Picture 1: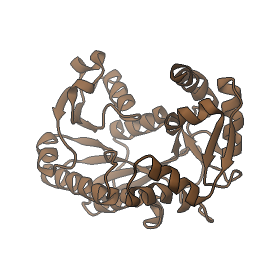
Picture 2: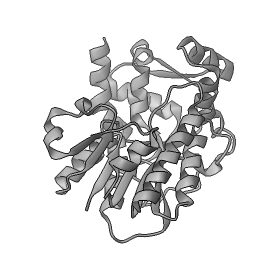
Picture 3: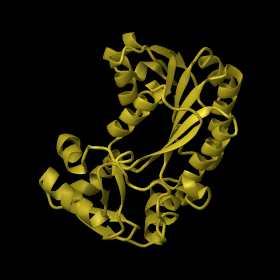
Length: 293
């Protein structure tokens, strides 16, 4: 079986690659800079230099592939939804031209709305585009990544996280490694075909208030969580150098899921994964905070 993996150095992708290698697969990894691969993994994979926005390059890089793990590349451009559309065109052409048998796509909770969830709308567009190819596809509707907290190291050192969601609104939180495990299981399993949506919700829905308590215990310093206005967050993002459209795309991922949103996939044994935020924060986040200090 020839399996291709995009974003193989990402939060999820590097786990996917390692798991496939342990399973006896030599994956083909697609990335802009092969030098970014960990030294210990370079001899275990076939690395192809490719820009996922270049449809011709993606088609060439996936020739002969049986299964594909597709992650839309991170964008910080002025028009992130356009970038998602460009990447979607690449994967659709690759699947169609190379007759790739199955795709596992890393999507997000909220993509079921199709519109009104900021940058998540780009993932929804990709889901729809892949569905249109008729390929066997599993869309992984993932919860909020634990690793997103690593963007807040400065705030965590100061002891206060600022958010725009209600502090008592629960949402799914998930470890990227657990997403990778679900992805690899789907890539290797012959037991499914057609279109599937697989939620990856982590072990529990958590409110931001609970997150503050968990982080306080795990990293050994008091972490409070403060709700701020949308305009205050908008100003923060502008100060960070984001364009107007990027700011709205980022805000929309919260505001679009804030009012009466219920994920399409309920929490069940299939959507629940094991790694807790407490375990992850103790093992990873407290060290990052110490390094930042």
